[in-house]
Length: 208
Image 1 (cartoon, rainbow, N blue to C red):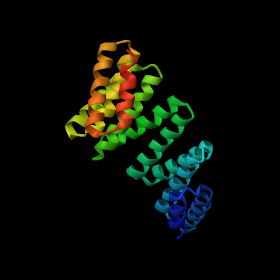
Image 2 (image 1 turned 135 degrees about the horizontal axis):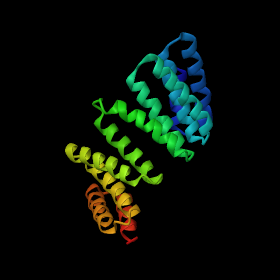
Image 3 (image 1 turned 30 degrees about the vertical axis):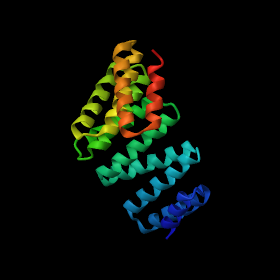
Image 4 (image 1 turned 90 degrees about the vertical axis):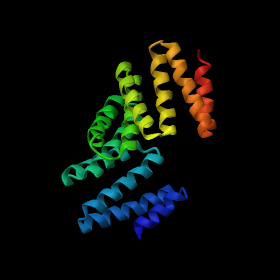
């Protein structure tokens, strides 16, 4: 019941109440010695702390979740914990640590059937490589992400990867190639009916 109540408070935006209920759920799971329940409650509690801007608490909880996942040997739990830690470190600007955890996640996802999750993670870590000045590596990851989207017929994935590749090319002053990718982003955004994507693409094209 505490987990259900916590979810309800989370949905309606009563985050302080959600924290209280997820903490109760976590204590109950620990008393029952149920690793899966402890992991799930830990992840949910961390998510609320992320929304509240308490990244330190979220980091601590996600690190504990990673320990649980490592001990259990559950690949899904490990992927969830590492991707959340990567997002935490990205949020606080520690991009090297974020890359470290994304790369751990990618090793696991590479062998999993979760191809869309793998594509999204490739794009995310590629963006971080660009931010940290490793643009060629960013291009490598974004090209792989784009190819996965093409193979899957994923229009949204193609649009996102084209946008990232446009940014990569811009960072290298390869403006013709950058403009080409951003035009693809614009066309795909219009196809999707995404006003936000269309606006972003127009803004990017206006930089040339």
